[in-house]
Amino acid sequence: MSGPSSPSLSAKAVSARPPGAGWVVLALALAALVALPVVVVAANLAAPTEGVWSHLAETVLGAYVANSLWLMLGVGLGVSVGGVGTAWLVTMCRFPGSRHLEWALLLPMAMPAYVVAYTYTGVLDYAGPVQSSLRALFGWKSARDYWFPEIRSLGGAIWVMSMVLYPYVYMMARAAFLEQSVCVLEAARTLGRSPWRAFAQVALPLARPAVVAGVALALMETLNDFGTVHYFAVDTFTTGIYRTWLGLGQPAAAAQLGAVLMLFVLSLVLAERMSRGAARFHHTTGRYRRLPQLELRRGKALAALAFSTMPLVLGFLMPGSMLAAWVIQGSALSGLGELAGNSLILAGVAGSIAVAVALPLAYAQRLRPSPLVKACVRFASLGYAVPGSVIAVGIMVPLTAMDRFLGGLFLTGTVVALTYAYLVRFLAVSVNAVESSLGKITPSMEAASRTLGAGLGKTLRRVHIPMMRTSLLSAALLVFVDVMKELPATLLMRPFNFDTLATRTFTLASDERLADAAAPALAIVLAGLLPVMLLSRAIARSRPGGEE
Image (cartoon, rainbow, N blue to C red; front, top):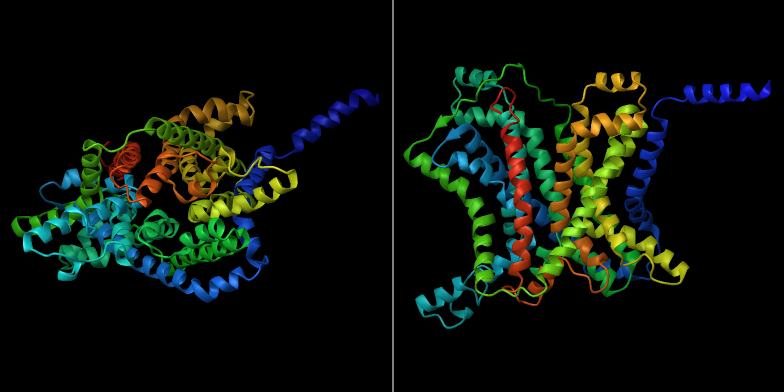
C-alpha cells in the first residue's frame, strides 16, 4: 500500500508549491549573475593597493573629482535648456518647420559623443578649415596673432556632450507635455497667465519629474563617456580607470576608482529622488483633447525656428556632413567589412541575450510581485546607471583571478566576457521594454490558458511572446544600437587583435587620422538612425486620445 500512496503525496507536494516558484528562482539567479560586477567593484573598496591609491589621491584624484563635477554641472545646464526649450516650442507652438523638428530633434541620439568630438576637432582645430580661413582672410601668420576658443578643453567637452545628450531631456519633456490636460492649461489662461507664464508656472512643474529623469540619464551618460574626455585631455574617473588598469596594471586601484564613480552615480539617483521631496504631480482630469498650439509669426517664429534648429545643426547635421565629406574625399575603407561584421555580431548577440534574460525577470515579477523579486529585478537593472569602465573592471577582476587559478587565459579577453559586460550594462533597457509590454496583457488571458491545461512556461511561449513580439524586437534593437556605440567596456575587454567600429574610430582619431576615422564613425551613426525614428513615432503617439 505504501507504493501507490507515494505518488499521491508527491503530487500533493507539487500542487502545494506556489505557482511561479521556479520562475522566481530563475529570476533570482539571473539577477545575481548580472549584479555580480557591481558587487565586486563595491567589495574592492577595502582591497590593498600597495600605495597606488594613496598616490592617486595625492596627485590626480582631485582633478578627477573637479572635472567630473564641472562636466556634470555644465552638461546638466546645457541639456536642460536645450531639451526643455525645444520640447515646449515644438509641442505647444506652431512655426515654420515645427512638425519636421518634432522627430528631427532626436537625431543627435544616433551620434556618439566621441564621434562629434572628433569631427569638431577636425573643423575647429588650428589646422582645420575654420581657423585656416580666418588666417587667410585677416592675414594672420600664427596662433599668437589671434585668439580662438580651444576645442580640446573642459568647455569643449561640455559643449559637445550637451549637443549630443539633450535628446534625453527633449524626449522625456515632450512626452510629458503631450500627456498634459488641456483643461489645466486653459485654467491658467483664464486666470490671466500668458502662454509663457502658463508654461513656467503650470506646464513645467507638471513635467518636472520627467525633466529631472531626463537630466539624470544625460548625466549618467556623461559620467560613462571615455572617448570625448580622453581625446580632449580632460582627466575624469573614466580616463583614470583606464590608465590605472592598463597603464599601472593595478586592478584593485582601478576598482576603487570605479567604486568612487559609482558613488557619483548613486548620488545622482538619490538627488533625483530627494528633489521631489513630498511633492506629487497629478493630472486633475482624464479628459484629453488636441493641445492648443500658439501660432508664432514673424520675429517670434524666426527666433523659435533658430533656437530649435541650432541643436539639430550642431549635434547632427554639421558632424554628419563632415563625416560624409571625409568619406567621399577618400576615407580609408580597408577592413571596414570586418569591423562592421564584428560590431553587428556582438550587438546582435548582446541584444538577443538581453531580451532572453529580461523576459524571465519580468515574467517572475508578474507572477510573484513580492518585494524580494521586485528588488532583485531593480538591482539587476542597476548596470545602466553604472559606467561601462566600472562594469569592465567588475568583470575583469574575478575573471583574472580565475584565469590565474586555472593557469591560462581562458576567460579574460574573450568575446564571452565582453558580451557579459554588454548584458550587465544594457539589461535595464530591455527589462523596461519587456515589463511595459507584459503589463499591457490582461491577466484573464493568462487564466484562460491555465484553465486549458497550459503551464506557466507554455503560456509564456504561446500566449505572451506572440503578443509581445514587436516590443521584444524593439528592446533588442535598442540594446543593439547601444552596443554599437559602447566604447569604454569594449576598449578594456575586447579580445586581442579584435576591433569594432567604435574601437577603430577611437584608435584612428587618437592617432590624429580623423579623415580615416570617418567611415567607421559614419557606419555607427547610420546604425542608430532607425531606432531613433521608431522612438520619435512612439512619442508622437503617446498622448491619450491623440491620432494613431
